[in-house]
Length: 187
Length: 339
Image (cartoon, rainbow over all chains, first blue to last red; front, side, top):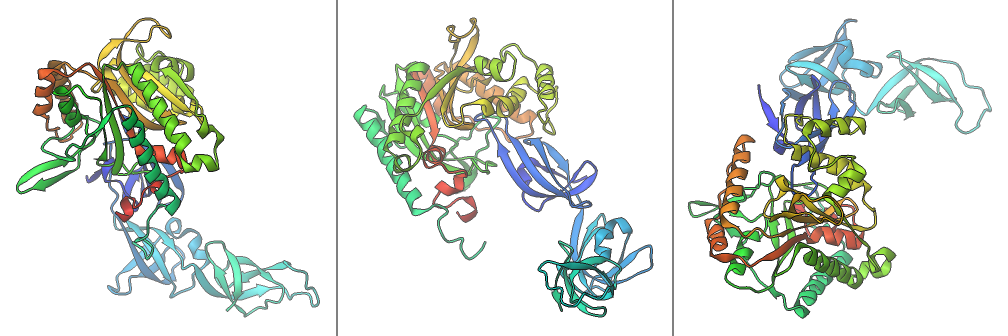
């Protein structure tokens, strides 16, 4: 089992904490003067995306996480798994519902996503920051209603719902920011 | 690396403030007859302190080390020369990086033959007051800098007041209970099987230091015997607590940030060597490389070190205080990431 000591901690290092793989985002030495040092470490849980903070006694060792990150192209879903392909090796990966998470709301095919693999299996899929999707259904906007900030719901071709301005019609292609889930513009 | 990395971390005002600080320190010691000295930064020896790690390099085929402080060399000078001395130099420590840490930092260290720990604390307070009043930043902003306040707390007073324990009589188990009771996070790797000093260090950062006056200076003195480092063991300040043997050691803090560490210096060569060997044992248990003991330093103590007190202060941190900087990077021309 590979381990890292606190003196090897740096941003981006992948470790196992509470049985989940985490990526270190900040590592600060806490020391009262002379005496025992401690490391206050911020990290992101790579499965849930949650940020956590933990303190370690210096020289403490933690288990290394065998984590890879790669760009993959989304192919299709069979309902149970979402299938992705690494474009240079053509190797395919199947990600389950937990790994895909909310990303499923934003991808329809051919998007380049960031996939994190832990021990060879996908644990997280991040969609591109912006995607372009067609409106499948929305009610017609009321003519003459020009009040600023007024929106209506629209269902996209992937099934997800976003708030859009009143002028948006069915069939329009919209640019969506996947980080906020918000409408950006008509594409 | 990015396009702006060639630039200094510090604003020009900060570089001027640093120059002024150095000038004021030298003036302070000059009028007091304390002589500036220089000792090697690069040495054949490394530290044995289990909580410090020397950086190493090589000369020809020999591994040699950058000093973690100029302490041994300065005491070697003192042993043959009863002269108050000071030094402003760089010190280097492995694995120290953070808002208050840079692997290479500036240190002021001075020694006063014939001074007790209390006398040296007085002089340190005088020096800090002088540089506060002489700094440009203090003229611009903080009124507290013009007339700084210094509180003095014995280690026992501070722990009794802010952590509810007597540090000279406590155990790891009691510290653990107190941490739990105060909702203090227990660091991964710290257990009741660890030394009580590890726990005291942790509670110091979590309960004691946060209770110190935010905009003021605090001396913490009379440390537990087990944290003696290179300090003499002696009777505590009995004005503030029942008699107990303590390390005649002090630290100076501004708010929570540590600025200086001083000792009534241990002069017993045999005891010093035993402490070094014990420290090396701790290093071995922690799986660390053993320190390379400076036998010249031990020999100097054998030949006779005058009764003296000495203190080392981090000048980058002092500059942070003077200029109200949150991060050490702000006061360094080039911090580690740009060095």
